[in-house]
Structure formats: C-alpha cells, structure tokens
Length: 123
Image 1 (tube, rainbow, N blue to C red):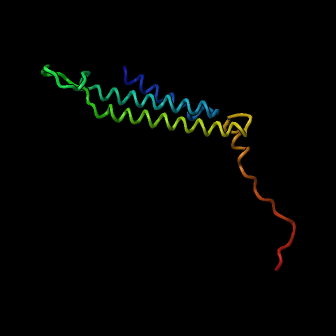
Image 2 (image 1 turned 135 degrees about the horizontal axis):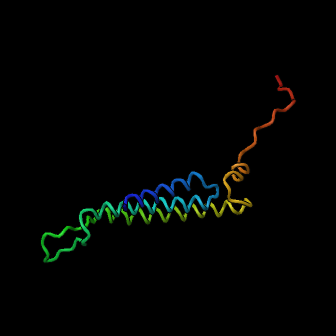
Image 3 (image 1 turned 120 degrees about the vertical axis):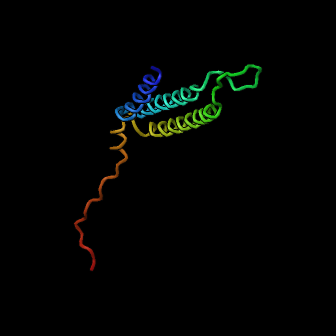
C-alpha cells in the first residue's frame, strides 16, 4: 500500500511537470516528485528494521540501514538548492514577462528569422 502511494506521488509530480504550463507550477510539481523519491528511499531503508543503529544491550534487533539515510539527507539539501535556483530564474523571467506561461515566454524569447534584403551582393 505504501508503495502505491509513493508511486502515485511520483507520477503526479511527473505529470505536473509535463502538463502544467506555468513555471511555478512546474517547480512545485518537481518538488512533489522529489518528495516521492525521498519517501521511496526511506521506505527501502526501513525494510530491514525500524530501530536506530546504536549499540545497546538488546540482542537480535533489526536495525535500519544508516547509509540510505545519509544519502537522503544529501538529496534533500541538493533538491532544496536546485529549487531555490529555479525560483530565482523564474523571478528574473517575471521581471521581463507579464506572465509565467511557457508558451508566452517562448514567443518572447524566440529570435525571429533574418529577413532577406533586396540588395545585390557585390561581386
């Protein structure tokens, strides 16, 4: 059941990136998708056990693997910094554009084709 919820989170984030036209909504969808990936890693790391891997007097206890936890902390920090960088880029685009729709931004920044001149080349 947890796997299905995590898959739905990742899928909804992916579909948001593909289908949404607003840049801020695309960034939020990417954050939702990365949250689903982090949740999946946490689920995989907790398969072995739920106890903290600290030396204690208790024998035969299934401990959680600490390596995926360290990887997840790194992934969360990197995801946050990428999200902040993308939001700064969107803020710079918002200065020049009245809207944050991708179609309007593409039309604003697409260079027009050079027009042919009627003059003859010297030759």
